[in-house]
Amino acid sequence: QSALTQPASVSGSPGQSITISCTGTSSDIGGYNYVSWYQQHPGKAPRVMVYDVSNRPSGVSNRFSGSKSGNTASLTISGLQAEDEADYYCCSYTRSSTYVFGTGTKVTVL
Amino acid sequence: QLVESGGGLVKPGGSLRLSCVASGFHFNSAYMNWVRQVPGKGLEWVGRVKSNADGGAVDYAAPVKGRFTISRDDSKNTLFLDMNSLKPEDTAVYYCATALSTTVVWGQGTMVSVSS
Image (cartoon, rainbow over all chains, first blue to last red):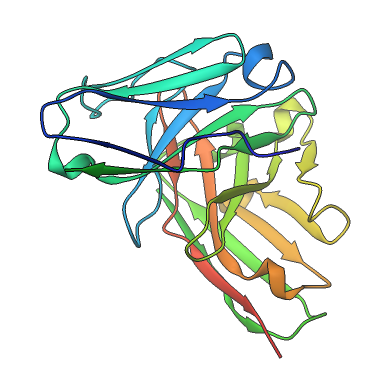
């Protein structure tokens, strides 16, 4: 199972919106609504930001939103803030009853 | 909350058992995962065990299948990862994680180093 494809880096100025893409296949993202997104700051454990494509856990800012179209999922961060600077990973359930993570995206706040 | 333990330094070909103690949710109904991360690299799913009520089936990622075994002890709210025939490329921080109804909970991770 190959890793899902994410851009290596995305940047934006404070207050701007950015979108991180996550591309898979019909055997993972395209076949199931089980896509989640994780934020990870250096030296810390991952934190879930979105689950089941577009659901936000309690405590996660509504500036984070998820969506999916075909084999590609997206995470949008609106009103970018300095604290959003981190690594972001997508994750999808697969047809093989396994999970696969994305390659990871480093978000930089300019 | 999830708390991992058992990490350490082991020689290639050696074995190690990791534990993950859960609290604050119904462990016996939770599907439990292991995820690892090579320092400075991305996340890699290792495997998952379903709840015993759902059959307790275990699925593994290809790189660890046949070498790693995931099990659970619901009486102790504990998840295990038995790692055999360890290779240098298994060096990573190992996390346990579970998807609850409205969130995903992660432990803080435990470091495993495989080196001679």
